[in-house]
Length: 347
Image (cartoon, rainbow, N blue to C red; front, side, top):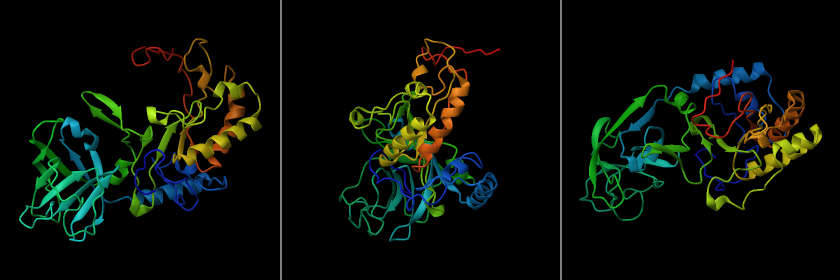
């Protein structure tokens, strides 16, 4: 749980695996994370703030920032890599979100092959003397030759990589630098999406929101998923593997806080079973436009008083299962059509 996880690849959360609170900012989410575990026992605000400040004070380790990779490798670009330890040969190795930067003395096992730093999606065998990916070959993608095993080449250097499928290996100016506030910054950005060909794409089978884990502080990653009518399938392979729950508007129509509580407990168990520790809901926008394409998502219906009564049971039910809730869409989310370009002016 101390590395980024993809959907369905990890066991359910338990009080043992998620015993330490995580936070995205100094104060906002720690009180919610305090409920992780079997029982809903939130901390007081005073205790939550105290723990948040203590954790922030310990987050003082610089992280390695990598930028300048080709568009094809943009999934690994502009990320903050953590030092996870050393290899058998004494070289540090770095990781973030399932990507690894490591030193390989002889990538094909041949003593005459020059040493190199490699950036790869494959987890290196840090107990090996050489050929850390174990395939007996030297990858032509994302590497730079270097005899310095103590640190990868800092500043701007020419790396070798394939910038497009089927193309020959070419050079790219890749920049590495240490960021003093890296650990804190890593909690303020996610990397479920990457920029490719001028647009953003979601990484396949990752949650809709992911932040970095910090292993040395026992802080797990955030694994956040949408939840308008259950665990949202975002890729074809996920279709048919999640429960289709009644919509929030259907639950609002029950006028029954206890029914909503039971619903959210079951919903929380499914999210937990799929490895998510955050549910991006409930949505509580009050209906003001009958044709709004997202009205079905809103627990308030047309009545803010109703929403206020029902949201408590939803949040408590979800969080009793070790999954924290994110109450969202507070006001004025009244149009889905052309939402990327329309103007919602509120006077």
